[in-house]
Image 1 (tube, rainbow over the protein chains, first blue to last red):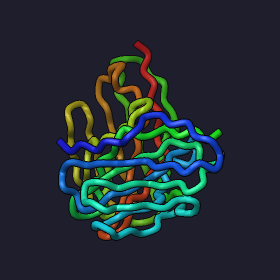
Image 2: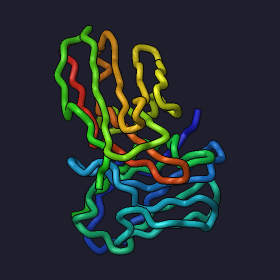
Image 3: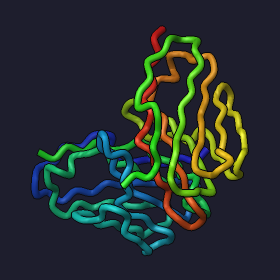
Image 4: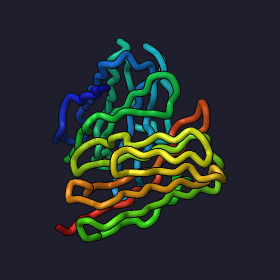
Amino acid sequence: DVKVTQSSRYLVKRTGEKVFLECVQDMDHENMFWYRQDPGLGLRLIYFSYDVKMKEKGDIPEGYSVSREKKERFSLILESASTNQTSMYLCASSLGGYNEQFFGPGTRLTVL
Amino acid sequence: GQQLNQSPQSMFIQEGEDVSMNCTSSSIFNTWLWYKQDPGEGPVLLIALYKAGELTSNGRLTAQFGITRKDSFLNISASIPSDVGIYFCAAANAGNMLTFGGGTRLMVKP
């Protein structure tokens, strides 16, 4: 089975802090994704990566950056956290196409 | 914004009842997926559909890819308490990102 793990289940940070969310997948998938999930807004794509060191903006990239130095690891970075970035963050990966995505358990981030 | 409309938004049913939910779009898609999200967890892929008209089962779950390519349906037979969660539909065309529906929240009364 595909396993996607995220570094933290719950995280509390202060406004202005730099925040790193880590995601690791163990099935040699080419594609990795970062979403945020908010009540009433569903899942929104922040960034995705189709190869090592390659990244593309999703629907809501503002205030975020990403890093993919190794195939199995995709990091989401909040350069200066703000309260409106309080959310559930979900990482996903897929093998060839972008369709069958497998999700991690999520990180619930609270920015105070 | 979201292009997939899921209904109903929530359902509260008795254990043992069958459940039906659907997902519609004004656009045509070549792939339809159904995910379930347990409280506090990430979505888990339940069923993937790749052909218009296709009917696929996974245990008590059955999903269909609508013949018009603009909709999909998920049925759960003989619901049990662990069916509780949010069910999401998602759809895509080749080379494009997934579009997600807003989810159907299912609650089961023992």
